[in-house]
Every structure is written in C-alpha cells, then in structure tokens.
Length: 477
Image: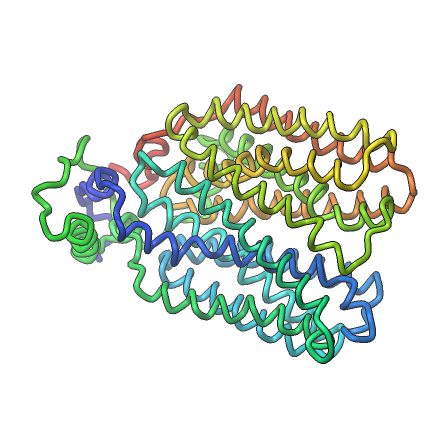
C-alpha cells in the first residue's frame, strides 16, 4: 500500500447493482445473529433475576443484581468504543470474529459463576463483546448489502434482537418450571445456551469476507476486486455478464492507513454536526423508551399486579413477538416510502400510543393482560423506530468513521437510556405510585416525540442510495 496514492474504483456501484441472492442471505445469517444474542442475553438476566437472588442461584442481593447489570452496560459502552475504533482501523472481518469470540467465552463462563465478584467480572466481558458487535456488524452488513434493500435488511436484522428475547423468555420459563436438578441448574443451562449459540455462529462467520469498501480505502485494490468478483460469480451463478450495469461514476480515493483523530471529530462536530445531533436524539429516545418500558416491565407487574418471578417470562414474551413482527412487516416501507417519512411516523406513533397507555395504568383501571396488549401494540411500531436509529447512524457518516460513529452514539444512547431509565424507574416503582411510574413513561414518550420532530426537520433521506452518495468518504479525491 502506497500512502496518498489515488485509486479509482467502481466497487460500490458493483455491490449496489447486485440482485438479492442466496449469498446475501448467508451473510445476513452469519452476521445478523449479533442482535439475536443481545436479545437473548438481556432477557435471560431479566427473567433469571429472581432465581439468581435465591439459594438455588448465587444468593445475590438487590444491590448486587443492579451492580451486575451496571457492569454489563459499562462493558457494552467500553466495548463499543474500543472495538468501534479498531473496526475502522483494522477492518470489519477481524473485529466481528474477535467480538463474537469475546461474547461467547464470557457467556459460557457466566454459567460457571460461584459468587458475585466472578459473576460481575464475566458480565462485564459479555457486554464488552456485545458492544463491539454493534459497531463491527452494522458497518459490515451495510457495506455488503445492495443499497436498494438496505433499509429492509437492516430493520429485519436489528429486529432479530426480539427473536433472541423470545428464545430467552421461553427457555427460562421452561427451565424455571422444571423439576429436580434441572430446576436447580436451570439458570446455568440458560447462560450456556447463549455461549454455545455464539460459538456455532462464529464458525459461520469464518466464511464471510472483508468489506471490499474498507479494503479500497486502505489501497488493497486487488483483494477488494477479487472479493467483489467472487460475490458477483456467486450471485449470478458464474454469469457475470447477465448482471445489471454499474450506475454512476467511479469513485476516486486517496489511500491512507488510518484516519487521524482530529479529522474524525472535526467531521462529527463540524461538517456532520446536524447528523450528530440527529443521531443523539434518535439513539437516546429509543434507548430510554425500551429501557423504561420493556426492561423494567417485570418490576412493574411484580409491584402492581403481584406476578411471580417464575411467570415473568410469559409476560415479556408477547412484547418480544410484537417487536419482531413490527420490523418484519414495516421494513419494506423504509425503502419504498423513504427514511424520513417512516422514521418520523414510527417515532411519533410510538410516542402517542405510550401516552394512551399511561392514563389507564395510572388510574388503575387496566389489568396485566390489558396493559400487555397495549404495550405489544406499542412495541410493534417502536421496534421499527429503534432499528431505524441504528440504520440512520450507519448510513449518514463517512466510510472511514462509520463503525466508530455507531459506537459513539450507541454508547451515548446506552448511558442515558440503559443507565438513566432503570435508575429513574427503580426510584419511581419504590414510591408505590402508579402515577409516578406513568410519569416516567411520559418522559419516554416525550423523548420519542423529540426524535420524530428531529427526523422531520433534519433527517437525511438515504433510501435506495449508495452509501458514498449519502455521505462522501473523507478520502475521496
């Protein structure tokens, strides 16, 4: 690689002109499971909190359960930032193998926990791996998928979080209701499920290539062209002359081995300032919303509807199912109608529906079944909004800083929503006041409304466009 050498390439146009194929499906199966694993992980811990506090578990106290959750979030934030920076510097493929291996080993180790300190230690590294997954996977997926279906694919991939949540809810319910030794060891088997699944997916990822877009930045033209040619052969069954012609002018790139920190922050705080503001508002809104509603729902139904720990998974399952089918049904509209109208609508409708739900809850005129139905409808819409936030961040920043940008705004959203919402709702639930909890829901609704307004005012329309058209590479000539 020769520094500052200018290369001309049509790799983005060649990738974007490809029709959907079995090759793309295999790539999505291998990469998209990161969201499924996160959903499984979050639901396992939420559903197993009761057993972990019992003598059959680790005899954890309430503060220790909270501290373990905090270490997981701290790991996710630090992992996202660390691996996000490395993903832009060293490549997508190296990092999505390392991050998944980190998660898998830490989750398997969790099953062998013997006390609070070891449990918190391995929870940190579980989060460290998952946080890195978000940056490495989202950038890799978007750079390999044709632009005309990028929105549909991203939303469905991100929606698989809820497949993992469903698996976690069903698995923990069955294990907690089993008899004999299986019940005693059930929580250990539950964590083992995630680790074994992660190890199996790691084998699939060994066949996923490096992003040709990233390779062209670093001057590896021959390797990038070889990978694209192999993809074209796989998609066309060896008949590349039958593929559509690449559209648009070739891209001229000035080769560099890395992007200086100063240039990264000048772009995010200067040229892309409005995009950074949009990313913060969307990520904070969806993160607070889901942590305020879904991840504290178990505490709410225990306090106000006296639901037992063993039955909590069944109350979370409908939310998870609705949250998966939302992106599955609505995703095509993000490519057909566009990003701006759909993100504006989903954030706004989710906000309105939550306001509708908090009134009967505050008045005490709705039971757990009715509240569950309302929240399932809310999540059907809100999960598409949340997935679109990740899609937005991945699309609107230059190729050189894509993974790091995802990491930065994921970290901000997680710190505000993942830490702020549980702390706030822990306090509100202890007041024994339905209206106090409803007030917390109102904060979540207000943040989602802010996301809707922000998207309407300064959103970036990226539907059907090449990533390089949405955000020009910093190294473009």
